[in-house]
Length: 309
Image (cartoon, rainbow, N blue to C red; front, top):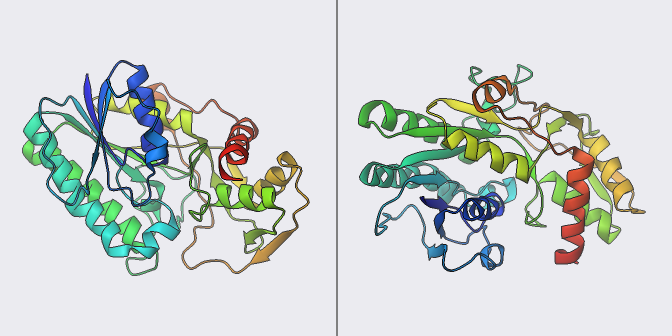
């Protein structure tokens, strides 16, 4: 099997490349290295992995056949996409079109990495795939969540009108080794603050929730989704809901940190609750997360200690 992974040098993309190579795939990785790092893919075997530095908003030309395309290219952290809002929107529109065109040309199955952000600040809990969301189209997060919503629509219509075999994964908060230490997401923020003995900064009073899925569980879900024939969105995430204040206390305990927990102003449009309904994934993919939060955090903290201090 021959697969293309865009965003291959990023957090999720690099783990997916490893997983596919272990499955015996030949993998072609594409990344413009805006948020990705070549270090993340430096250990991949050159006989099975080829790296192309390219922005997917430019037309993709790949020699030979392709069986599968995993489109993971896009800034995913609020810091990254708010620093480059137009680039983010073009990646999730023009870039998605370009990768869909490549799938059409190669007769490859196409998987679009979408996000729980398409639900915005949800009014329904947990979030089912049938929920249309509560999104601010002109807010500071809109460059990401609205362009991901467009990407879903584009993907579905390439399937309906042009016959491309497509899949859509709505990815909820995922964590693990190789997250960027300064990307603004809550787990790397808390871990680095705790390890450095700095104040652990919690937005609001920390009563907002997230549902954290360990990277190996997510990768398994993406692979299973690729190998179905279901074209509509599927939630992939951990349904265990955790308050942010509880996460801060747990990370402080696991790092043996003396950091103080301090409270700061809530960002604009920051979701209050986030919890996936994974009934569809359980039924369709026979998938559910296996790694408990405490276990996953220990592995993640170990990586940050070794690589970032």
